[in-house]
Image 1 (tube, rainbow, N blue to C red):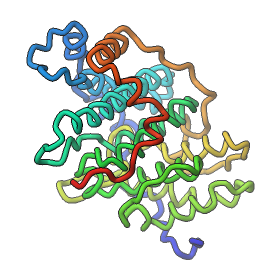
Image 2: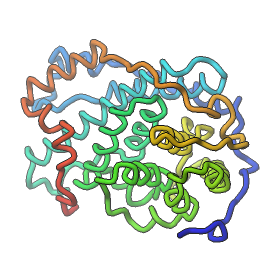
Image 3: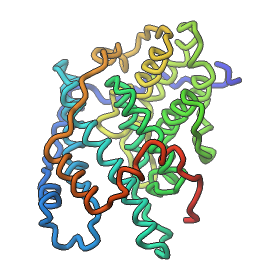
Image 4: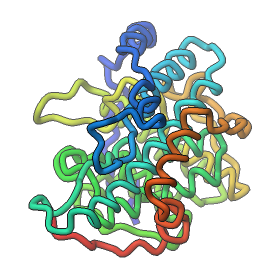
Length: 325
């Protein structure tokens, strides 16, 4: 078992981004629209000869809404409705994206690249964690299995998985797998080389919340050091503007403990300042809007197996390591 003596707590990063400049950065995004999906829904996408499902509008608008939600949170304004909207779009994107990766293998069995490899695991795991934060248990569980299926079928974006070494994201998915007990992925060595996360995984179910305190403080400190600006060769787990001051990995752990009926500790750390100092009550689910309904209707019409391929049963039964990239 990993012990406290095995970790090096770096303390809070002195140059960690403050709230006001971060809010300004969050609000600097380029607005996106659902124009591409409006055309797709109306079958006005003439160049789409293979009827590929359209995700780009939802992807862009979902990201915009996510930026806005975190800016609102850091300002102390109501932010859950915006986060719910963004998370619903992002979960929808991942479901559509997974389906198209599956279909691509069928349409192009001899593709020279071995298949499509564009599923972004970095964001897919984040969307799962935000679902847990919102209290959307059913959606979070589905997303956790979906990401595992995308990983095990090697649909993942090579860069974000094999080169960027996102240990924080691997920790969140490993935590999900430990909670469920019936899903796994053969991670590369980098997913297991952070003693702080290994210690948390070994103790996260402990009935005594105080046992977790030093590990959570160390994880919060690590988060601040993993919020740096990236270069072409240096990557950080929480460099995305939405994550710099959002303790999503800690809040996901808290939610899972709460779901098991366990008490959570109180941590005195600037990463866990309001509104991130406590879990919200489960939030209302965002109901599919006309754009989502239109896209889903066309996908089902073009591809009658859509619901079968994306069902929980099919995803849970997805074979492991089926490609040789």
